[in-house]
Image (cartoon, one colour):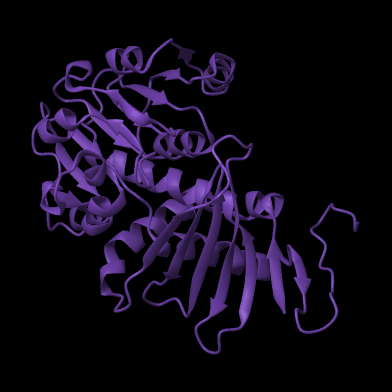
Length: 327
């Protein structure tokens, strides 16, 4: 049987703290997997791109994931797709999960973890800045507030109403530009579709931390090259960052990244060593992250009986979530 887990199922199943711990474990252990993950992306004859992440693998999990996404920036939601969770024993399709939900959670919470590791220790007051008030920013803010104190929040989005709504939900205020966010914030989170730098070195200051989440395919840019060259730069994967991430966007080689988040969490790199350092975390997103959260959701769904069970080789059998009627 295959368990189908839609958005509402995943929201009921996923716990932010458990997800952060699973991602932390993944960053420390993923290098032990012999088969590297691949991120495959292609243009389409439509206003979007297609992306596949294969395979999502982690030690001690006897399963793997295959993710297929459609990215259409003008659509709402902009990302749609499915994650296939397969048994590592015989390839059985254990679950089909909504990709937009898993991707937002694993991307936002992993970014929160990287931000927590690299940002300066809280001072008398820590102001968080958000540029791009989308689903991933929601999860970044949620996750970061579980990891450290945040005293204030300032947000900018191309849609002023969207920024204002985000600010209201998170007890902050909105401003009119990315530079204004950087001027007010100690920590800046960027999660946009931008193809031109939103911040230059002159917009930042010593001691500031920036997490650039939007640069996950060729052509996208959020930070200018002078910011990256002046900062301690950490990524999730050097070759991937050089092929389609923040290094590719500025023409920098893989070795321009001083560390990976995994190296810092394993104690192989010290990370920030000076309160006056600028630091940048610029991940692309790795297949094992999909597995980490998909496996959590699947195990909890099995325990609680949530989702729709389907025999793909035979007739469907509905397993109805508590409180939901069959349709």
